Length: 135
Image 1 (cartoon, rainbow, N blue to C red):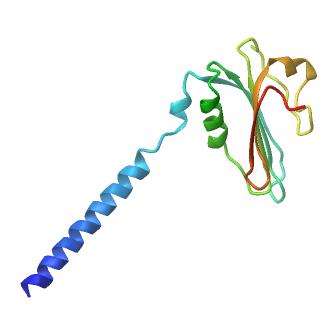
Image 2: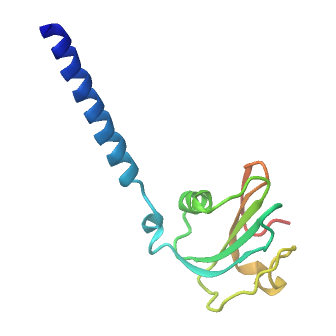
Image 3: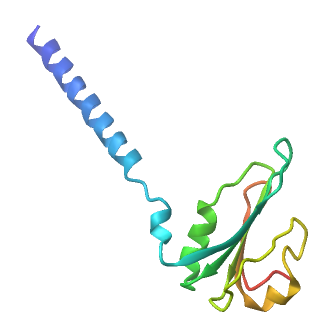
């Protein structure tokens, strides 16, 4: 009888520790605050298609040119299966909002020299990260 109570208390303690650990891990995940001070949003585009491929195009002004955070920022953006998400990182020289479209070149060709890097997540989740604008 004493050994069954001991096993019960140990299992209860184990469950409580696991619930606490899972709760802490769930509530302490990094959010967009990890990117604060590294970018300024310029513009974004999302097509109105909710049943087919969703195209998301995001333009940001990069205040920090570290490629690791740019890749992490792209990975953090929403993505839909069979859709496409593109993030264009512009230099600090861009000060105005850019009009985006769903077809290449996605914005006025006059802005292409200001593109530092391009992040693209394709329809099957494949990721491409390119310095500059893709040719």
